[in-house]
Length: 288
Image (tube, rainbow, N blue to C red; front, side, top):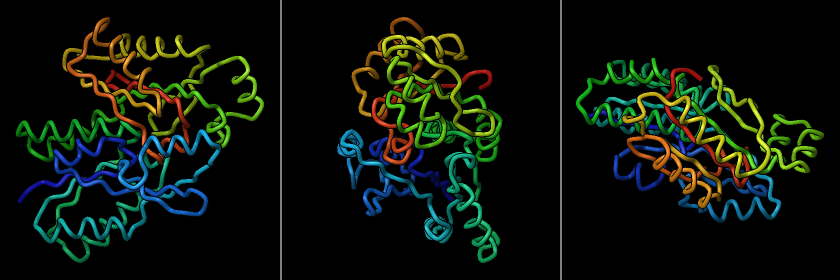
């Protein structure tokens, strides 16, 4: 019996990574002008093309994964005799995780001996991705499945997201900033800092004036709050902000300590809510 790791596209891991590591990714959907497009890690709609659409004023909406999609994916691996571990996008941000749980319940009525484990990441984007990455590393080291799952559950609220949003209009649309605050912030070049709290909700936690200070803020956040830095795999997520992502990576590698720093793109679903120019650092700390 083999172990199958499944996640959803809210994880924002790269297509190369999930293919190399045999991870199944169930796509959420993005609605652009009435056309539903799967957020399949850039295969149907490239990240660059997506952010070009946003810069042109397109305002997409997003759709969670439905129960039927999870049912079919889970069933495929159950019938192969696999044990399934699904790590999902925070239930506080999307109904996707709850869809997976309902699909699991339906399948356990049909396959009473099936092994399906579901984990609410209480994270978004590469916070979710970091948990998937960590689970894969644990299993590759020979950690027993239940022990690896226990580690993820015990440490998921230690995944810290520090996110700088460049285009305030997307936060205004999502109700996280008032129209007045967004207008004033844009005029004064103020960048809000989003964090993910213990409930898995994205909240505005701070503000920084100017892009250079914002990048320095992200570096300081990791440098001051990261734990066991020599063993840290740090994720930098960006939405059409590659140069700034590389700058932040270089700062961490030269002015701090990390085992590895990996840059990934923010996908269509998360990017619909944060907008182009978003930059973030994700890592393990003591607490959020």
